[in-house]
Amino acid sequence: EVVAALLKAWPDAVKEKASSPIFDETTYKYVTSWEAPLQTACRCRAPFEVTALMLNTWLSYRENRTKTAIISLQRDNFTGDVKVLFSHLFALCNNNADNPSPSEIMDYFV
Image (tube, rainbow, N blue to C red; front, side, top):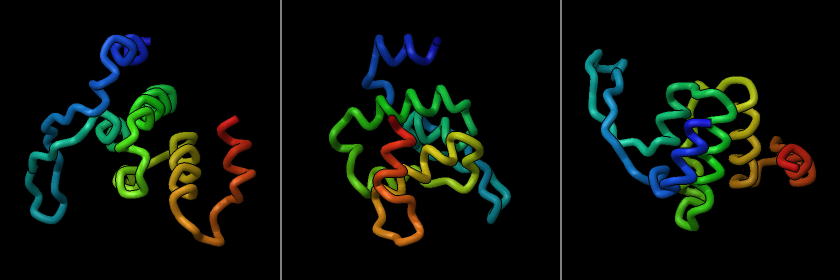
């Protein structure tokens, strides 16, 4: 409810980038990364409801509906419903025979 209220009051917040310390496993140091809230939610494994709401708001901006923008959200740590949500979204961007059919994807979102 809090995230929904914040996004209703300021939908552009989903596009704002903020610095986040991320642990680099190669150098074993924290580095600063500039992420949008949706990217942070994905990285931190936010609950499905929060991630879906932020994704919906993020996709409401035309510039975020490109293949490059959508693929930039890929992470290895998706779990549960969030993993299914993003796998269907990524399938829409790729022409891979292993992907679910467009009909299956539409059934998921409807």
